[in-house]
Amino acid sequence: MPRPKIQRRLTCRPAYQCFKPNGVPMRELASIPLAADELEALKLVDAKGLNQVSAAKELGVSRQTLGNIISQARHKVARALVDGMAIELIPDEPAE
Image (cartoon, rainbow, N blue to C red; front, side, top):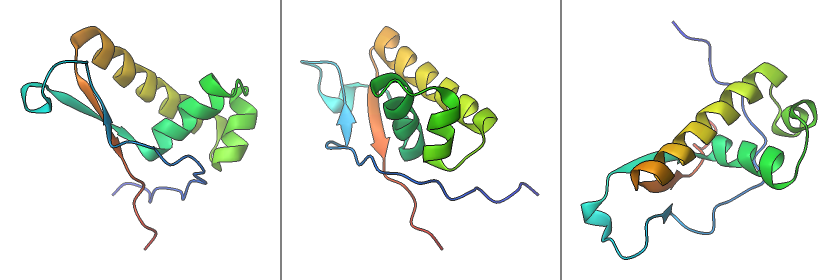
């Protein structure tokens, strides 16, 4: 049984639900989901320029976990750009 997911501190809320190639209807595109914590990690490391240790503290996870999250997020964004896919921004799950 996997460990429960640690609650992350998310401050970034996406302004849109998806990003897609221009001029192609959404129904004709494959899409890839980008989770809220992945978007937050991209914002902290790539947009704000924080190092991984500082970004991990802001997100409330270990540096290794942040590294895994940022790696997954970058892979998804790169795949969407190269393969012409839509990126669907998934809102964070409410705490139980």
